[in-house]
Amino acid sequence: MSEKVLVGVDVGGTKTAVLLSMCLPDVLARKEFPTLPAEGPERAIEMIKAGIHEILTGQRLTEADIQGIGVSCGGPLDRVAGVIQSPPNLPTWTDVPITSILEKEFHTGCQLENDANAGAVAENRFGAGQGFRNMVFLTMGTGLGAGIILDGHLYHGTTDLAGEIGHVRLTRRGPIGYNKAGSVEGWASGGGMAQVALRAVELAQKRGKKTLLAEHLQTHQAITARDVGIAAQQGDALAKQIIQSTGRRLGEALAILVDILNPEVIVIGGLAMRLGESLLAPARAVVKRESLAAEVCQIVPAALGEKIGDIAALCVATGL
Amino acid sequence: MSEKVLVGVDVGGTKTAVLLSMCLPDVLARKEFPTLPAEGPERAIEMIKAGIHEILTGQRLTEADIQGIGVSCGGPLDRVAGVIQSPPNLPTWTDVPITSILEKEFHTGCQLENDANAGAVAENRFGAGQGFRNMVFLTMGTGLGAGIILDGHLYHGTTDLAGEIGHVRLTRRGPIGYNKAGSVEGWASGGGMAQVALRAVELAQKRGKKTLLAEHLQTHQAITARDVGIAAQQGDALAKQIIQSTGRRLGEALAILVDILNPEVIVIGGLAMRLGESLLAPARAVVKRESLAAEVCQIVPAALGEKIGDIAALCVATGL
Image (cartoon, rainbow over all chains, first blue to last red; front, side):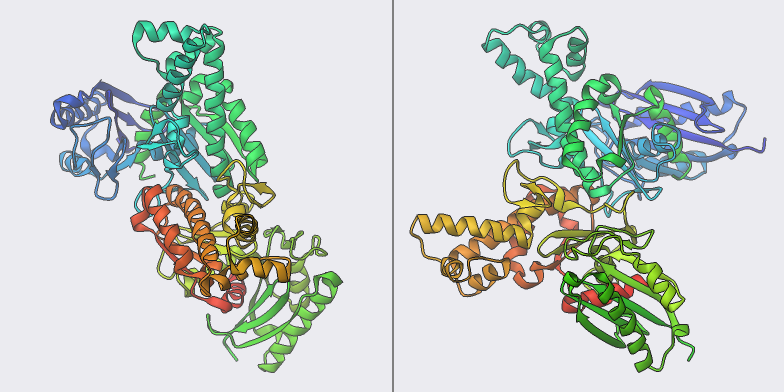
């Protein structure tokens, strides 16, 4: 057959997916397996190789049909050398030369990109960022990452460290994110929200205030951002307040991005997709108050949902 | 003659210069006159036209020899339409269509650019930013402006409002800059430093501490950033402290730029050229502590000195 196929590899801390696409964003074939980082990278790499061979064969394709391979993975990584360095979600993966491993196996070009940048391109081409030349994509998960597209191109920075808004300080003290107390990641990520929630629940308990989150804490010995979202949906007042104050802190971070980058759109994945307006409305109010070009900047949740990792990896295969 | 000439117009609140260049950064001819904004824009525009005709004639050139005209001016302005809107330093200039006025007069293309962006390009091509692809240029005058060069190109943002680091909040309260208390411009511009100095002197007087700045305040009823610099040179301890704390606040702003843009160099004009290491050393210390990619980012004073306005305007004439 004459048409070439893109191969995507989305390496996550929990699961890894290998993908084929003839025409983005459509996924032609997909295979997923647990990454099992505790067992080291070797097994996962064998699964990636075998998985790609399997889905190619399933489509009656060979390695000669591959246009390019793209790997999307959490940082830190060396994009230019194609090496996964030491992502916190893959603790046993140290300096894995993933692109040369796959290039050797499939005799074709392979690119590596961090997942926030790959997600930015995916949302820019096929999601909530379509048609925008200046865009910031934020991944609001346990941490807070960003991918920046300026004048239509992904901006990496000098040493691939552009977009580290999660590391920017908002306050002198505060919840910890990115090893920094009072950082944007401390205040406005899933992990940060969990810290804020824990303090709020302890304070509520001292004051004898009732909250579903206190019961949750007693049963599970922990509170996650997800738990706060569920409690808010069940009408819990404290949970709603926590989401609102996280939204305001998120807004402070977005205001900085708006004043420095003057983007047309900020697309937010992860928590923002699940919590929606309860998080984004207070964020927008702060951006409007704090930044100069707020009226030209839309602030919207990501649109690709669960598919973002697949499409992001396949976008990397296009060479971005 | 076969070689074409660039025409530059540097419009400032105090003086305006018209310039010719055959080969940047060399200035072939120059004429300067007071802008006198109180008298309205008409007179200044006539002076600009007459000045360009005069320096062309002086070089035995005609309008047919012009390659392009560049106008550099403080914002706000509409770069695309070529209209100077309402700069605070030119209070009577409202919606002056400067590029069409000059295109009509000289029958050649004319571009308008704000002075921070033009200065960024000038320092990038001929000053302290030479050879760097990712650079931030800060003008530290009464206000604080920035021009951003990313992947070798000037980045304007969606509505020409990129680089407004002066508007970013550092603290909830504090000195006022950009109509915002606690902003970067409030803390780390010449105007902000003057406010900080005034408070520091009042406090010193209350506590009976001696400082040259108190005598200065009594004589002149005001303290400027320049006065603080002079007092520091004369060994005044309070003046030195003020410069140091301004440097630390500047460092907080630079750390944000480093975490978001991961630049190779930050070039700082105005105050930083005059105060040098007394301002930049404390700024660097904060950047090192606060940002991820500090070690790959040089922080240096601008190198073009008094010539920056001339060269910046001429750079605009190249089409940037």
